[in-house]
Image (cartoon, rainbow, N blue to C red; front, side, top):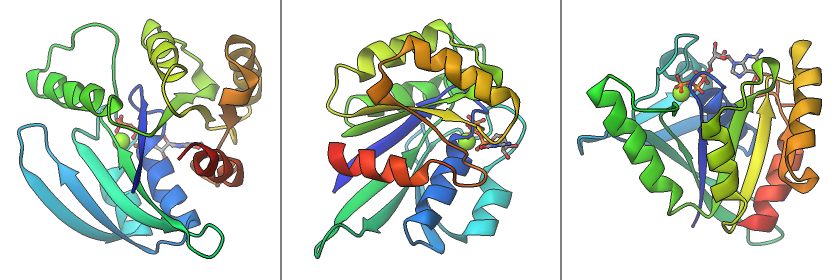
Length: 195
Ligand SMILES: Nc1nc2c(ncn2[C@@H]2O[C@H](COP(=O)(O)OP(=O)(O)OP(=O)(O)O)[C@@H](O)[C@H]2O)c(=O)[nH]1
Ligand SMILES: [Mg+2]
């Protein structure tokens, strides 16, 4: 089982990406294993539409736990199993909400165990914060790392993507749209190579 962790600031589209990427890889029912920062665990079985309605939101800091789905990814005759984990959005500095701080700590701890780090930024609102620089610096030294420049469906994202592409190694960045599936084939190929 290979572990891919999606990390980034709040509201960049991490949860929507997990849902639609899992759907792209063949899941119609998503069995979410949710690990809350205080240790409580729960299991949710939701369809794609239900997952979107219940787990994504335009309001920031909506996800406050680790939530994973296991996916059988076809690869040749055998395929492989991928555990795709969505996480709590990170912020620069120390957040005033204690619960959110524990959830962020949980995300950071998972970074150490991931086989592939999918670092997501919102290309339409490029705010390459010190936090992103730190995730990039950590990620590029680890086994697998990919910067996903999300929301490429929005007009402002094209320029944002070009700016981001100047900052990072070209082999490590992909433009994607968690909303409409742009770039998913390329993400699948990269994860396949890295995992
Ligand atoms: N246009 C567009 N909107 C997107 C895309 N991805 C996500 N969104 C929207 O951005 C908002 C945030 O999406 P989420 O998936 O909840 O973001 P998140 O990164 O999980 O946010 P937190 O859980 O708060 O950290 C929602 O309103 C989504 O519909 C995209 O590729 N294109
Ligand atoms: Mg989320």
